[in-house]
Image (cartoon, rainbow, N blue to C red; front, side):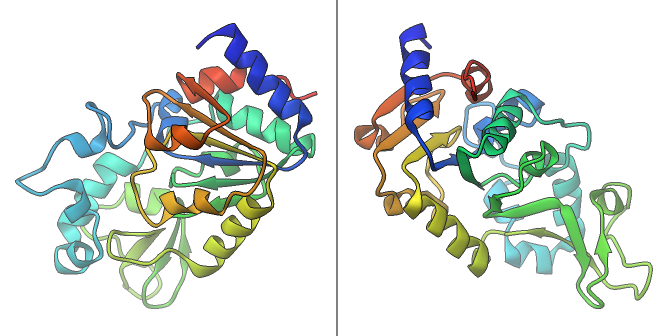
Length: 244
């Protein structure tokens, strides 16, 4: 990451009126949450011969719920995680009325924890859980502190996390809102994602604005279309940006 690259990003942000931020797992690594597809990420190892995609699938959830929840507690719940510099800077940009929306593939809820309001969580949020029988709402701790299959204290139904599992469609109205914001943006900042997961990755094809900025540790194919590319940690880069 060079000073000239940060200055170029600052100039783009200063000129922009409708910024949309599209983020992936790399945005939250500075908060102590592992990413998915790096050499040290969640998807680098199988468990008992099963890939994470298999365990975190709709079919596995229904067929082997106890194993699903054991894996889910160990690998997707980070109760001590706090918003990092990237999350905090995005809140400042929203307060300055420059940031029009955040579209995130993350389920950690850290953008909302930082104070952002216009957040489109494509894959849901681990802090939101519900009984599959009576629809009673439960916090993350209800799953984290339970054993085996978490059960509703009202009716005994299974408490399921409000996250999109493999094999399930994305929530319709979240997608509509996310695509609307990306379509209307003058600047789209893509950070901490390989853009390898569909259908979320195809969302950037709706961008019609002037500046496509990519902030990522490693090169990705979408860089060919970008106005500016900075290789580095998203939190470190965003921390160097001024909002006013």
